[in-house]
Image 1 (cartoon, rainbow over the protein chains, first blue to last red):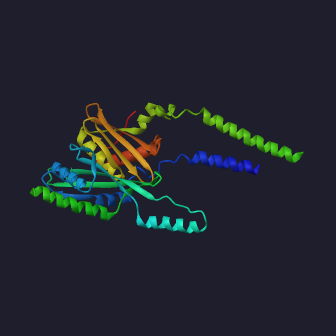
Image 2 (image 1 turned 45 degrees about the horizontal axis):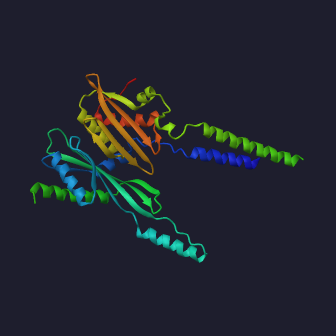
Image 3 (image 1 turned 45 degrees about the vertical axis):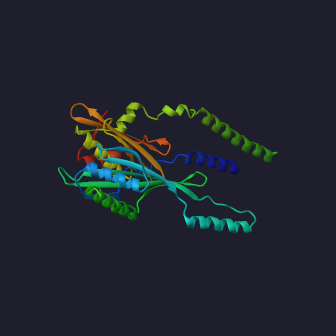
Length: 181
Length: 148
């Protein structure tokens, strides 16, 4: 009888386990929302939104992104880039595990992260009515697949360094474009 | 013998459980039938997914929707000002995709409708939409009216 209960319980878990529910906080503003917005936004003194959007597209192209969608009326640019996700540290671990298990006679080759797709959306808006300033907000996220084609990571990219570098490049591009060099 | 009888009973319970489960699963719709299926009626879904705002400024509303999605951690995939739609995806060890559309309601209002997909499920729980409209109305500086 105990065996039956175990099997029944296992079945209940299997059936219930396949439905992951939406987390309670998925659509809720959190204390981090403001910090995220600040990290993702910069103010530019520029003649207009469209010029800034054009400069942003140029920077994304410089970085190897291709344009997926855009709306000049709404101040939006969407771009993506596929690239390798191989990390030397992880490869070293895979090799180490394979070497150790080889000693036991049955080598185990763990899967490793192979490629990633990075999505970025960039929006512009005037920082107030009749303003000379335009705000640019950029957000990055990525999906990572391992060498077996399985998705291993779906995550936002929140590293401050990434945003700093992007805005540094955009500042340079705005300067270049404005001065038509 | 009592022991054999017990084992037989065990098998019966197990067998009926397996039969019950296979009938239960077999009775479910096929994966093609499920394409246009929804747990709730259209009317119920609409009352959960849409709100009216006292504005007729389409562009400002769409821009505020984009900003709200970004505040909530979404990366925008697409926006169309003529149609009045915005689609975005939030990745956070899960994939949450949402489309928000606007259309006029009467002479003084815009109807904002949102529908979300969490991984491979439609989101039909009212709570997440409630939270989205709270965030949106804060950004719009306008109240989100329930409509039936």
